[in-house]
Amino acid sequence: MKKRTIVLVVLGLLLAFLPTCQRKLPSGPWELLYTAPFEAGIEKGSNLPGTGIRYVGLSDKGAEILIDDQAAFKQKGDSIGWKGNPVENVHLDLSLRVLWVTEETVYVGGTAKTTVRDPRPEAASIPEVPVRYSNAPVTYRVEKGDSIPGTLVKYVGKAEEGIELSGVEGYPYRKLGDSIVWKGKLREKVFLQLNVRVVFIAEDFIRVAGTATLSLTP
Image (cartoon, one colour):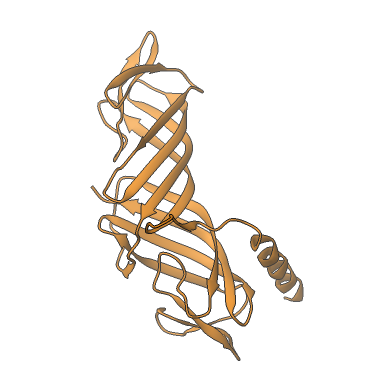
């Protein structure tokens, strides 16, 4: 247990030097940034949901793919990029490679960078969607009295039991290494599931680290 605590403290100190996933534009609103590994299969005649990437079918030139209505012929290992706004206030930047091609499906993988502009979090259940952007690593420094970005979970302060939080269901206390889970809505049609752990505790701030999953509805 002591060794685990030391590891968490060291991790917290290392994360203190990493950039967070939140920024504020000059004279503009806050933005939340998520970069997630991504894999998907695109069926023949279908678009990758929320994007302008469409698999037409297999030809003697390779997999015919429309990227915003422009034809491209791709082989295994070739790149596919797309930038756009799948829903309002969300910018998506896909950097993908063709992993495998069949007559019926092209499989792609790479990274998905998602920017959510002016988040307005509220508690909500996560709907079923055809594509999720999962396992985006996040780390946040949360000042006393502030909320974890994208959530309503607030750091109240240190307590005998570790730290006290508000905006969580049930027991409000966490110790070093304990998890914090949040499910909610960032904007209309934009949903977040956050799963982080407390990796550093100070009197006036905590640091949390873990993963985020975004779900976008049409």
